[in-house]
Structure formats: structure tokens, C-alpha cells
Image (cartoon, rainbow, N blue to C red; front, side, top):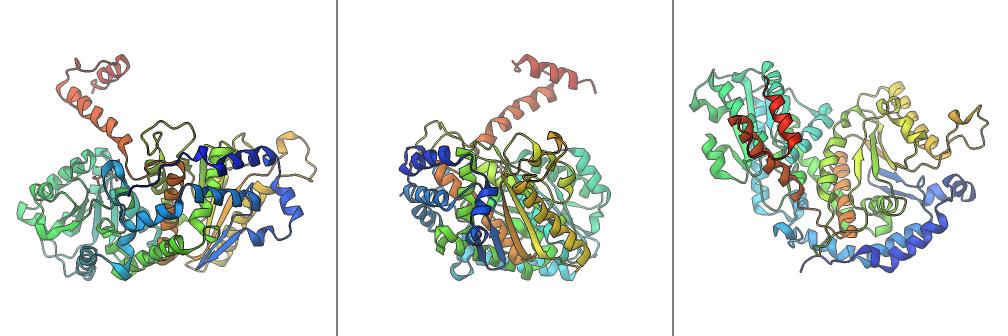
Length: 522
Ligand code: F6P
């Protein structure tokens, strides 16, 4: 059975939400706090090491109640069950969506167990130095060659867990920009470097181009027989991997029921597994699995991903907010936003509903942001005094990893102060002129997590995976395909052909033609 296909706008709850919005849109959160001393205690969810405070949002208990009614009408509960039971909810590609089963140790498919075992043995050999390069030296550097989901997740997680890393240096090459490839190769020694080519399809232009260039570089020093000691692959396309010259026992699996942007939990995370060791990698998976259970089992009003998704729907579809900011107060988390941009925007950037009809309401939030406190000194001006309403997720860890108390106090003080400033503004405070005035009433979620550990990071990533799923269900779209990336790829093929042959008769657009001619002056 496929997912229900219900136009959210036609539901009773949506109509009630619309009427409720008209009545309450000018209510200020400052007044809600003043009237209700219990607000902060009521609008919070405590779960494991997580504390979500959503009281600084333009909602009342009634708003939340109506949003929860909406989940009933769009049959969210049934949709979650369909996802977790492996129904082909990715209908346009006729695939199941089972990244959650990659971390379900209590009920794990044998092929997943086998792959984890393969990752464990491989990473142990690399870390211990038992795996030798072609001149007999141990591996000291790992290079992940992949793009999109085959890059962003592992890169983000490896950087986020730097504290837990071993001696191995890690590099991520994704862009087809040859200058970046050359800059990276400059610091690498072919004798001690392992390249992991990650591509579900093994046809992605950027990845294959980079892999070929790097193999050529490797072969200027080593011979073809040495490739087996320095190149491994993660892919579903075994023939293409073999044609590249990679030995079959150096191939790690991917499955069609795991989407690229949800694949960091699989062998796509091999670079992470090598960098932090298998035990930490498994803990990351277990943390994600705990969030999966929370998502599946908790009542929706106590359910962190559901509540965050509903708040986002409220701002997107009723307040007409176009974007959401995510601000982690941890430099380790610098790559969280680019990772989320793919997860959220590739999933929910859709304008056709599950019936195949065009959509007349907003979908797909634009996610942006950067680490706090850096972004306070960059774009926070716009959050505080700009004309746009930008709901913002603040994320921080109560404990620092090195115990730098003075720094940690300041980091947290800034987080809390910013959410308070956005809420309160300068109301009740006399200011010299309008330029110094802050209206406040600007919404934020505060996600306070005890400590940056592999387990908590796994839970945090899974939280956002489930949030985007809930939004896709409510918006009546298919979140797990990505047809929107195909057109550009196809046009690029023709354009590349024109550039290579310097023959432009197939290029019809005059603007593109001018650009092509101009770029030939090199
Ligand atoms: O950009 C589109 C996309 O298909 C992503 O969804 C995917 O993560 C990325 O390309 C890389 O694909 P592959 O792993 O097949 O190289």
C-alpha cells in the first residue's frame, strides 16, 4: 500500500489553523511569557541527553493542538509505519526507504550485519597499520572521493567527531574542480594514502573524473597491481567498480533502499569508521537508532522530530517564512548546515504532490546558517532587525570536550542571550532612536545536548532526518526522490561536448553561447 495522498490544505485542521493564524498572528511571545509563568516548563521535551525548549515560538497550546490534529488527518502515524516496515514509499523510484534499518541492531538484515563486519575488520587493519601500502608502509591518510550524499554526511560526521579521531588524516574530495584535487594531492604521499571511492551509481561525473585523475597520479609512482592496496570502493555498481580496476574484495556494498543523502550510516561512512574506529562508529549508529525509537514510539506531542516539523510547517505555510537558520554553538559542527541543506532541500524541494499534481502551497524550507558565535558577527544583524521572519534552531552541548570552562561559559552565554534577545527585543527599554530598536518576537528552538559524543551526534542527525520526513508527509510530496538534479546533469553533458569539440551549433541559447565562446579564450 502506498502513502496516503491528502492535500493538507483541504483538511479541517488546516482550515482551523488558518483561522487561528488570523486571530493570533499579532500576539507577541513576550506577552505570552508574561501571562504564563509555566510556558517554558510546558513547551519543552526532555529525552536522553537532549533538551528541546520550543517555548520561544509564536505558538500557544492551541496552536500545537491544531498542528497535532493535522498529523491525524494526513495519517502521519501510518506513514511512519510504512517507512519503517519497508514499504516502497519512494514510489517514483519504486524503492523502500530503510536507512533506519542500517542502525537497528535488534533487528538487522544479514547483509547489513555483514557489511558492518567488513567495515570493522577493514578499519582495524588500517588503524593498526597491518594494512600495508605498495612500499610496505602503513596507511596514514584516507581520502574519500564522492559527492552529495557520498561526501557530505561522512565529511560532516568525521569533522564533528574530531575529538574521537585516531592518527589517520582524512580528506574529502568532491568538487570536480581540478585545482582542489591538485591542492589536496600536494600534501599526500601515494605510498601511505588510501582512497575510498564512494558512489552509489559509480557514474557520477565529478566522482569518476576525480577518481581517474587520482588513479593517474598514483600510477606515476606505483604500478597497476598496486591499486588493490590503495583504492577501495563503496557502490552498488559492481561492474563499473571492477572496470575501474578495484579488486572485488575491496568493494563495500550500498543498497537501492538507502538514499544517498541518508547513507552515512552504511559503508558510505567507511572514512568516518577508519578515522574514529569501529566502536565509535557503532555508537553513532546506536544513537541514531535511539532517536528512531523515540520517533516511532513517543506520542507526537512529546516527539522531538514531530514537534520541530510542525513548528516549521507553522512558519512556512502560515507565516510565509521562506528560510530557517541552524546555528550550532560548536566549531566541530561547522559542516552540519551543508549536510542539512542536501538532506532537507534535496528531499523536500518539490512542487508536485503525491498524486502527480502541481502544488499551490509552500514546501521545502531553505536551510542556512553557520556556527555561533561566528555568525553573530556576520548575519545575526538580519535575524534581529531585518524584515524577514527567520525561525532559528540553536544547538549547543552543555559540556565542552576539553573542559575549557571560561570558553564554554561564554559560548553558552551567547547562545542563551541570542535566543533571549530575539524574543524580547528592546521592548520596555528606552532607546535613543529607531535604529537601536529591536522588535523581538523572533522565534527560535533551543536544542541543548549534554555533550558532543558519537551517540548524541547520531541522535541529532536522525532527528533532522525524521523532521524532514514528517514535513514531506504533511506537504503530500515524495521526499525520497531527486529528479530535480537530473536536468542540469543532462545539459552539462551536451555543454561539455560543445566545449571539448569547440563546436557550438547545438547550443541554442545566446547567453550560453556567449559564455562558451568567452571561456574558450584560454
Ligand atoms: O546530486 C544528486 C545525487 O544523486 C545525490 O542524491 C547523491 O547523493 C549524489 O548525487 C551522488 O551520487 P552517487 O553516490 O551515485 O555518486
